[in-house]
Image (cartoon, rainbow, N blue to C red; front, side, top):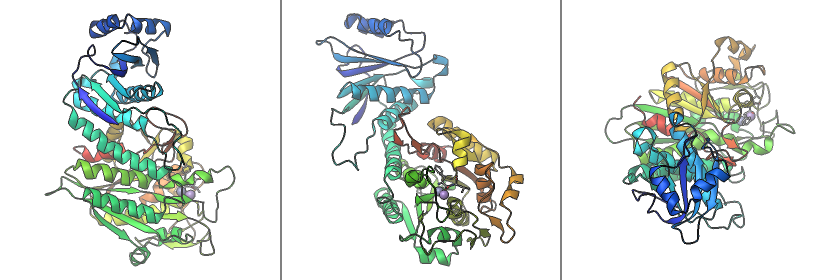
Length: 492
Ligand code: BES
Ligand code: MN
Ligand code: ZN
């Protein structure tokens, strides 16, 4: 699929489908649109009346126009109130235009949407992102592609001529999101710690990043007892991935991004029971997938920031070698952990990754993890939990998320709840009581960061979309990649 920008006027554009954005309660046609309607013998006006199209956000209407007209299908997309227009509105409108264009078998699709905030560059990028993310398909595990109909082959963004650089940026970012989606969607017999390390290697060689993969022995030398405790029952070797993007010259700042990388989470000996969603636990490397996706995008965008991408990758399995509930592990900072529940494994792997990241002397650390079911109960499927003791970093991430449209919501790090993690025998337990489960998880992680600005994103909900949802779903969303990219590229 090729995306081009053009200044061809609406009236002169020809192709299979033309998608036009209209604001709420402003669907009377004026100017260029009125002339187009005239040219199409009043079919746009007719469509608006017949479908009672009001321009509400999320609404759409489609009609066939005459055989001899310059376009075959007209697609109207509602934009909501003009004063509420956001980049995310455009991303979603473009997604809807793309999905409808495909359904209407349009090989060529024109998209005409208003410019946000007098900023054609951001507008073009958002539209290109929305349409690409929505038209993404994954046929890797089908013996034959299900959808054999015509695909959208070419998209023209009308009124945005000259914005080629924005389209390139959208492609680079989307390539990172697609990688994350593919990694999350692939089952655990396809994506393993070994293949995750190979994927990191491939990113490094394709985009010129440095790479270091620590094998089990090296992790032992570094004292990563928490990570290795989780890895013990797996027949597959654990892999500690450390990718580094270094800009030329002295970087403006140095940051680390860490992703939870459980290629499968059975729960361990505290095995997940029936109805626990164990069969979906291939998604438990969603943080790691977002980290690698961000690495792929950042390797192409080349910002003036040094970025370390880190993931302690393994599976949480059962075997005669499995850690027992009640075992005491020692993490690489010397802290001891009583494992009162082997299913709270993500925080154990992250503990050693956080200690490793802090030793790099970075200015800030952000981790992403499908950490707790409790966070899904609190915020639902669309919103990630944000936890940070650092207000400035939390605000930076909130800004980055506002721009990406990936929703996050800050939850408190209530110190008093750490009491729930007190152990009679070790420095702490890995699991607290059920209430506030995502908060105690974050408080646990905090024990492994001394004095670097740090934030944790619990992405257990939004890593996956059961149904079609804007430009996401059904399936893996690639959540986090675009927010991370925005955060790294921001001036902070
Ligand atoms: N990987 C799960 C969390 C999860 C749940 C991710 C649902 C995606 C969807 C995590 O390792 C886990 O098992 N957490 C437990 C923690 C509990 C044992 C304290 C949970 O949330 O139940
Ligand atoms: Mn678990
Ligand atoms: Zn897990």
